[in-house]
Image (cartoon, rainbow, N blue to C red; front, side, top):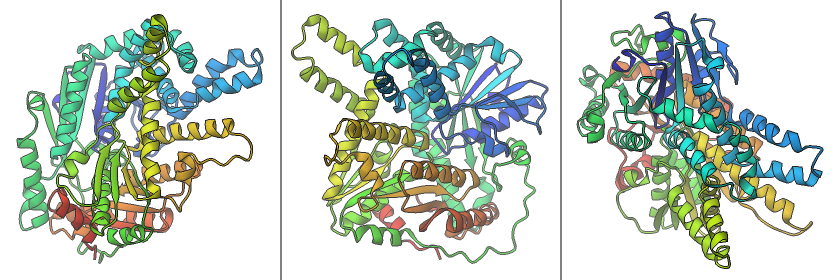
Length: 585
């Protein structure tokens, strides 16, 4: 593996959700530990699953992994970090300021912005706290999906710039109070990230055109903030030998080889490794050790595959269409195909003559890639965080800023450069879109799991704020109330028939339920078993899916559907429509 040659102290794995960063980071940590090095494996992903991979509960403290001498792990829990951060800021004023003022400060610190800052505080500490990490030769970071990773890595510069410029208004005083105590740590963290002698960034992708374009954008954005020395790993490539006498395998091999041949120029010059698709799930020590071994395959092919039958996506679309209008939200881990399925459902509804607005709040936004043809009754839009933030800044400057003198306006402009501004702007755009669901279908392709939960947390904070300000008995409706109403909103949890994605989807469902939102259905996407393969490797992958189907059907979902793995990439109206027309039996 090129990315393991003369490995520096810090290794970061980044890329779109679902490409295998966690597995590769875990396998890397094991490999380095078994070379006699002392290794710390860290997850900064809000949807962390490192503990699931090793079959041990890790949590927000450094814990030795018993089965791998020399290896320790740490999961940064964003919610726990946020609570500790709030306690650190609010603690000194509790009992000093009036209780109503303290509650107000806690409310200001209840949003997603504070959660991200708090997690980043711990992330920074690992790069700069020599006492905490002095005993480790390598620190391996399993970072969050692309959009969140870029924001995380941009935070040192963003917050340092904001601190240098001024404090902003009261909404930012809490986070600033915590950050100013460690101002020097942010510069040290940026310096460590940009130092190629200390840090290696590994971009992880699949052999898919859209994923490679996304990782190229990640490369450019990281390079633009000084992180230019990168490596590339293309994971899960189907071996050419599997293509003989199986049209599905042949289509996959052709599609992957074409994607690699046409990869963006920015990626071609990077040191590159390719990892073959494995016939087993990458959970447990033996599987992780085998990930980097090209000839490791001890799996025995099943004599026959169980006769596969499962409900098709068309049944769910029929039930959705019967309502005539409403909000349809697809949620799940990044990389499970939410964008494609959202587009497929929207196309199917529009072709029935129903008005549909298809939109995304994913910072990486792939709808342009998934839907290339125009269709009657269908409107496509995107909640772009950068566009919405600029729109919000202009709105505030034209209203609040109109009557200010030059000094006051300058202060307001500085305040609007706070990273908190993006949270407010995205939430406002989200609210505008879901209001349309009273008269048409609004189909939302939400962001990968971590960002989705942060987005919903922002919505929930707004719900609490409106509830607090409204007079008793006065009727009002907030976006959170609409999300909680099953008559107005249908949440579809999207997953893959693999161990970790199903576990993560179950965790998402539990989080949604705690927020008072009950998922309406599950969709198992890209099922190999439902595609009835002939290739040995694909048949082994199909056989491994049966346990996950049973878990979804019997334990997690009140209703579900299965979408087969397609021979052709589902791009364009006709292929998207085919996803809702296909059967799985």
